[in-house]
Image (cartoon, rainbow, N blue to C red; front, side, top):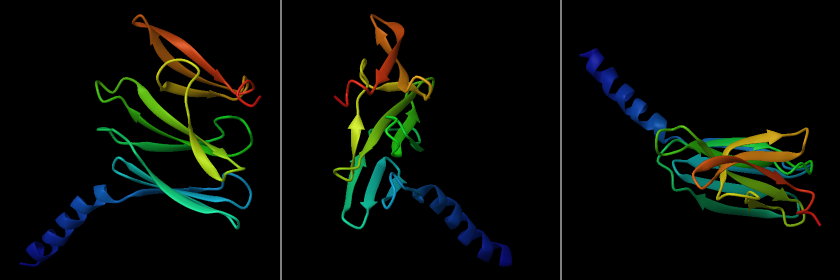
Amino acid sequence: MQFKNLAVPLLGLMWAIPALAETTTFSPTKGVEATLVLEGSTLNVAVKSEAHNESWTINFEAENELHVQVDDFNFDGAQDFAVWQLDDGMGTYGYSRVFIYHAKSGTFEELQPDCGDGFINLRVDKKRKALLSTYWDMSIPKQCITRFAKRQA
């Protein structure tokens, strides 16, 4: 009898665990706090500082599990973030959406690669200050190098 009384709450807890949101908090720059709440295919972003508070939602078309990665993707000293997943096909490629922090506006803006339709198999090359990814040209995989010096001009 006691087993049945314990089993039902435990099963309920097991079903509830996957529904919990993943929360990531970091500081893009001094005095600024960013909170990312990833719940299923929805990401809630909140940015707070003394002068600015803003929040918004980003929706993803994803069947596979999403993951958050915090890094300085444009090499400006501010922390940015990416949301990535394995492709919905065979799970061979990692697909990333990159969001860079703009200190002037206090918000994040989605970054597009210099070639291709998105960041596939994204790698951060800190030595060359570039983002490396894959794109296809006539069904042939090629390397895309996204640099930032020309974007700041």
